[in-house]
Length: 178
Length: 179
Image 1 (cartoon, rainbow over the protein chains, first blue to last red):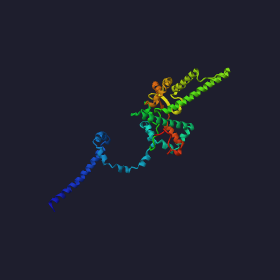
Image 2 (image 1 turned 90 degrees about the vertical axis):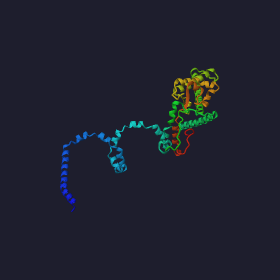
Image 3 (image 1 turned 45 degrees about the vertical axis):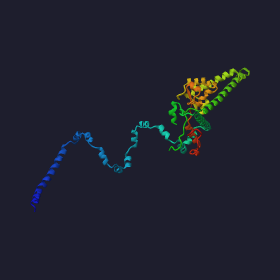
């Protein structure tokens, strides 16, 4: 046997028990320390803000596979636990509605399609008079058509370059609305 | 969802010559009719009370003055109170301030007072309705007024569509209701 190997095995006979002993001592010391320590007091002393400032969240986020995380979430179970009434009750709808441009919303609605596809047409027909209203609408429409026809010819004859204002200044916003 | 042409309402736009002339024609017919009826009623009343029959000579200065006073009352009162006469209401137009504001009663009366000027200048005062950029006649310029459409073409279009549900998708609305 190599004298060096012999020396090593003799050393191991000494170090192995010492290592085991050291481990036991360490565990015991840690137990004693933990039982002696007030963890709450320790946590209170930690400056979490300072600690968090040192954490680079972006690096952590880049390592997170959000898709995989979301795949693991059962949204239905989550939603079934949510008391939607309580959530809705906490929502202040007024500032939300203040941010909605109702005029713009209404302008986007295709009223023609709405009237033709729903019972709204019948409601309008029932509520908006009969032959009198129909006759007035027809007369007014014809008059507007004739107005425009005459105006076009006059503008052509006068050879005006600049278009004339369509409405008085105070009524300009109103005309954009309908 | 907005594939259809957007219906244009002319509400607030300057009213054109045809609408205004038609409204005036209706007003003239109505006011003259009411005036004739009033004269007939007075004649009948006098006949019933006194037994004498009264006949009104249309060419008489008294009748002419009464007629002018009545016309001034008819137009002046209508414009001062609501900014529109019966004929204007029928054609869906109304008188507003030059800037589009609601007509002040004072301006309505001034408009009625200077209205005859447009006639007295051989009708040249009305030329403004055709050629002036804001379609304002002489009496409009003096009184600081303008005439605008006051009816809702969009509502009219909806009524038109509502009346003919079978044709709603393909029908062409009355002239002037869409562009």
